[in-house]
Image (tube, rainbow, N blue to C red; front, side, top):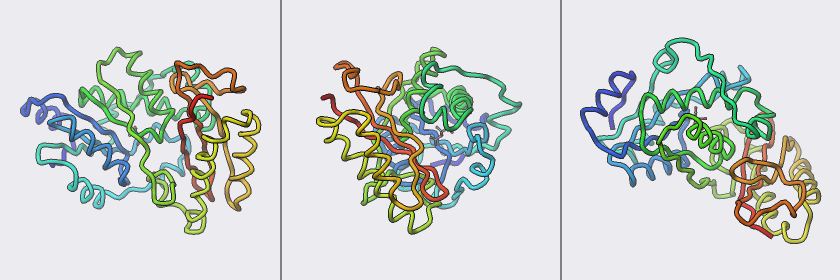
Length: 285
Ligand code: PAF
């Protein structure tokens, strides 16, 4: 694989190689097996893959979160050697390459701006839309692969692509989990060891809902989720919603479920000082 730092170098290389489809995996580094599975799936589908590593400041609504976001450039490159080929490109731009001037664009995503992550991280998805649209403009991928752990982000990116008329195919890949079920995340390495041990409760709880949905109503399920997780010292549920996968409209009753839609239980938990998200598909009843 080749490490590329500038837009001009990246575009020149892609032009010289003249391979298609071009696969793209955007990341913020601190890579783990979840990212590697995205890269692997891009490699299987595309003769050339671009994987970007860029910690995008515009998507952090909390300055401390940006400061503390893990950065592990050496181990990232070591890990990527396991999956990327000689022809693949690792794009590690500095901020001026992505934002030669301040990005003042504002994006609107309808209901996606009014639920879950959007309510708890104001401005976050605007920043994601800024960087992803900019990266798409630079890389011009045919296929872009994202993790389903960031469920609302995937819906936002699909909406962004629809709005801008970009032809890139957006693929959401399954969540990769640790042995105890915790969804892999760059933030897991920031967890205090005791909190990390107990963090398995998140997946255990949301897994139980896939069975509970048959016999309990939405209000009962929500209070089960809150109690099960908030009873663990240091854990607080920020939100739990069951939503459809397109507009992410939260269900208030099971009668609102439609056969032509898929539903996911989505959760955000503050575990010690770290915020974790996860989700699981809930079958129709
Ligand atoms: O999911 C992420 O790591 C980031 O939000 C993304 C898509 C790379 C944009 O910075």
